[in-house]
Length: 351
Image 1 (cartoon, rainbow, N blue to C red):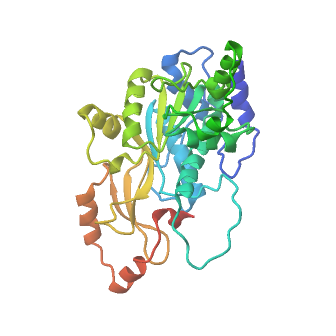
Image 2 (image 1 turned 90 degrees about the vertical axis):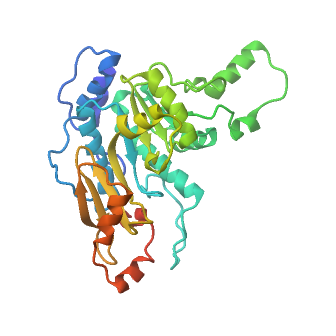
């Protein structure tokens, strides 16, 4: 407990980094707590959020991350233990330093590596955000071992990235396969090898995936439909006392769920805490949907010149039909439509 208090107050004297947002002073810190009160305890670490209820779109990535953090604060204050976070596909958070590329007139579409880096950077931001909880109680879960290994490599020796980096895929990574020694080993050597493979993170490579017993915050990075089946089981096992965060799961794109229970969990029980992504482009091109908890849903359109303009505000998330009706009601000149047709993805609007 003393370590937790020290971690919280240490944050008050740390300057804001390009990607890290310093935690607000805790309103109260309960001397004794139980596992059931973990979400409430985390909320006290973050402090209160913004009182501004009027939705306003972020002007750039940095402000979007700030609004996401504030929305997370608000959700924790309301003791939400199931959170859904979504940023535009391929958002450049500029957390990881990249080699400078030659300037080209035509920008290339994001590669698979770019998309994986974007998801990893978002996870890195949230790991930093929850550091006061304690790194050994934070689980960051990637879909496969290679993605997990890349995060371990990038975050190694970073004091603000302490966490247990795990993977839903139970196979051994390619890196570990290369390191495997073929000679016979005794029991002690085999035990040491097992500890080297997964003992430092609480991860094993056999049996179904499970969170470490003392996990208080579990973040699942870009899980797809297949991975969400495992997440559903984890939610049942962990209970509501464990905070579970979906990062770029993009559940709205899933048209059919395996069971009604899964649909209920991911569409209703998980709270959309922060959402900034493209609206259905087939019916509302160059439009986005935005929400920061506990604010309203906002539909905005990116004109040929200038920042996105709000064209709809609603308490509920607008569906495809509503997005289409709003878009068709706009008066857009033919010239502007041609210019907008050449615009890039939503992520570029805030870069």
